[in-house]
Length: 523
Image (tube, rainbow, N blue to C red):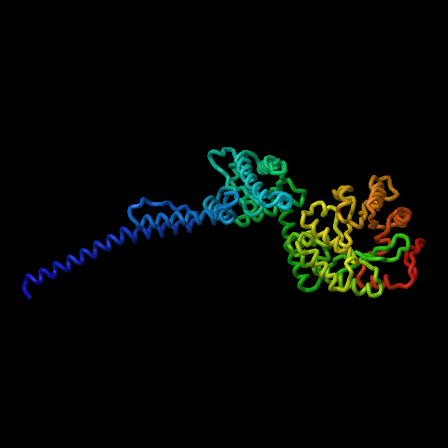
C-alpha cells in the first residue's frame, strides 16, 4: 500500500470521527440536554409537591415540544390541585402545602380554622344543586375577604385557604399573622360570613361552625392538625352551630370515647349484641294493652353502660345506624307477626333514623318488608320526633307522604318540644301525637307546661288525631288523662320496657285489670 493511500484512509477516518462527534454534540445539545433539563424540572417539582414548570426559550423543535409538554403538565397539575368550583386549592394540595410549611418552619406556631356551613344540605334540597354551587362560589370569595381582614398585614403575607369537600373550608396561617387572638379571629370569621347571600328566590342566611387547632400545641403534622380542627368544628356543631370551638382536652377525650363507641357498635353488630325491648301502650279507659313501642338495647358492656340514646347518636354520625335500623325492623316485624296470630289488632311503633327516612327507596323497601312478614301496613306505626321533623328535607317528607298513602300510621313523638307549627299538622299526614313526658309530669302543678297537655289534646281533636300520653308515672296523672280526650297511655306506672317473654305474658292474660288502690295488675 502506498503512502498516499494510507494517508487518505487516515484522513477519511478522522473525517468520519469528526462528523460522528459533531452529530453527538448536536444530539446532546439539541435533544438530550433539553430532555434532561425537562426531566430535572419535573423531578424537582414532584419532590416539592408544587408543580409550577417554567417554559424555556424555544430554540428548536425539541424545546418547543418540551414547552408544550410543560404547559400540559401545568394544566393537569392545576386540575389535580385546585377545586374546579371555587378555584381554591383542594384537600391534597392544601395538605401538601401545609406539610411543606411545617417542615421548613419548625420553630413557628400556626393556626388552622376549619369551617363547615350549617345545614347546607337543605340549600341543595330546596333550591337545587346549581344554586348550591353558586352559593359555594360566593362563599369562597367572601371567605377570602374575611380571612384577609383577620390578618395584621394582608398585603405582606396571605393565608392559605382551601375547599376540602362539599361545604367544608379551611384557613391556615402563621399564628403571629393574626391581628387578634385566635378566639376573636374565629368570632370575626363567623360574624363576617353569617350573613345573607342572594339567591334566585330571595336572600338566604347561612350560618357557619368553626373549629380551631394550633400547631404544635394540638398536633405535630398537617394531617393531625386538620383532624384536630375537624374535631373542634364538630364540637361547635354539637353545641348549637353558628359558633366556634378551640380544641381542648375535653374535645379530645370526647372523640376518643366516640371512636371507642364506634368500635363497640361494630362488635355488637358482628356478635348479635343488640336486642329489642317493648314498652306497652294501653287503651286509656280499659287499660288493655293495644300495642307496644319497640326500643333498642345492647348487651355489649360498653354500650349497655352508656345508654341507648348516647350510642345511637354516634351510630348516626358514623353511618352504622342504617344497619341497626335494618336489624330492628327485621326482628320487630317477625315478633309482631307472631303476636298478631292471636291478637290481630296489636300494633308496633318503631323509630327510624333520619338517614333511613331520607333514603329514596325507604318507603318501598319498608312496605315490601312488612308484606313479606305477612302483616298489613297499618299494623306498623312509624314514630318521628318533632325536633327531627323540623330538620327534614324534601326526600324525608316525600317518604313519609308515601308511607302514609300506603297505609302506615305516622306518629309525631315528643310533641310540644320541637318547632312544628300547629297549622302544619293538617298537611303532614300525621295520624297520632305523643305528648312528651315533660308536660305529663307537670299535671296538677302550677307550671306552664301543665297547660300544654290541654292545648295538645285540643289540637289533636281539631285535626282528628289520636293521642298517646307518654310518661304516666302517678295515679294522679293517669286519672287526669282518663278524664280528658286522650285515647292511649304509656308509662312506668303501667309497665316498664320489657323483653319479649314479658310482653307475651302481659298481652296473653285472659282477664287482667288494673287496681288503682294497689298499683298492680290483677288477673
